[in-house]
Length: 607
Image 1 (tube, rainbow, N blue to C red):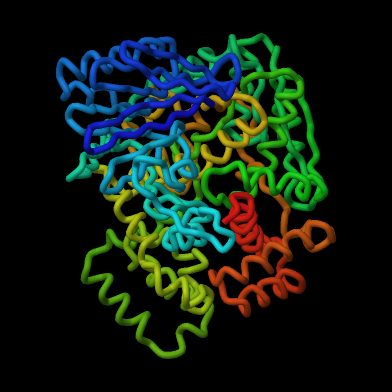
Image 2 (cartoon, helix red, strand yellow):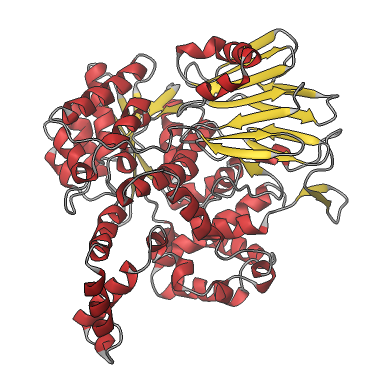
């Protein structure tokens, strides 16, 4: 995708926005000049840029209106700076420099499909679509976040807190960056930066959960809006990701309906017990009459591609389903496709994640009268030996978890909630980090909606972290590596707006996940898919690493190098390897994957 880099010196002697096109050519915006950049393919998001007088603007957006958007933003801003707020919405990212006022404005769309990073010092500010580009010094704008390495080269500094965030979340959540003094623009926010001030504001309306009463027409509205979202892309796109789940099957079926079956659906399978969902993908492909492309991944493929995958991400990224995503996208590109449709977002919009139902059970306890809870806790938590009796032990666990407030309770089973960080994380790293940082971040995001019940707050949290910081980052980056654009019909503004308004009782009646969605498409989706458990493109890395020597060698070599960085204790890593070999290969393999990807990323960036 076309990228940007910009800077503003506080003394006013220099400001510009530089665009690097998908062909690698660089352009610096000049007075009265604009440009529109597509991605490397024929469709997808556009970058619109314009410079007029003291104002330079770059806008990432989708849709036909993009072409003159930057020029329009610049003109209206010059007329009325307050008008800038009207352009900050769920599908748009923007960078604006006002050199006369000595200000920079940055904002990122709701799902961070067009990320931005920035760094500042006493000389000025730089911003870019690449965090790595900001991690090194830039002549004329201070020395940045750098230090000399042993061989005399300049290297970027890693942020210790972000290393812990990665270990905790398996990715680096915004607004943090893996680099020292480089920040990511948090999705759905606008940042105003001047020499003496940095202010961050939630874009008005984006966090509002405007719940209304259920309507008999809600199901029809959902079907119509999702069909329209797919139809918008149907002329330029005829390829889909197909896992055989609810969302990918729906998107594939709607595209097949729009294109009269002229659709290529791509699925990944694994020759490992409990991981292969190809039968469901075949069922969906046959049901909708599309051309089905089955790709089976092998351990040798993992060894071949892992370093490339690790290097491609702007930040360390530990989601193992990146690899099967890349395989699907690469196969589609080899068949001549320029873009694909993905089903991401359905669970986060329409209450499909198991944690929503589980937390509802705990919230029920908190609705009991205070006196009843105190009596229950006094009798259950203080009585001796009850924790030795299975039914009572389970009840004790329930009460203890229910007493933990949201969103902290969501992390009850996080590794660092069940293990003392100081027993795992090296003392050198512990001294540099705030162990409460991850939970503080979750709490801040969870409280951003001004008024919302617990379900809608969890949805909002997942929009920001599960989608923006994880799933969409995974899919978008792998599609970019493969050379195809990707579109997310589920995340059309009309569908996001609908998810804000649907009452919790409709989204999640009792313990029925995705109930509203399933009922809405009950006559469109095969019943076997409606009733199947959720899975996705999970990777049997732990099992393969146990049995395939080259993959095991790659992983162990990475852990050996990671030991030298003093992030994790050597004894812990040795114990992890032993448990993987002799206990639960799949479970402990996931931890090894996360640590291995961190080391491979650091090596790829020569850090």
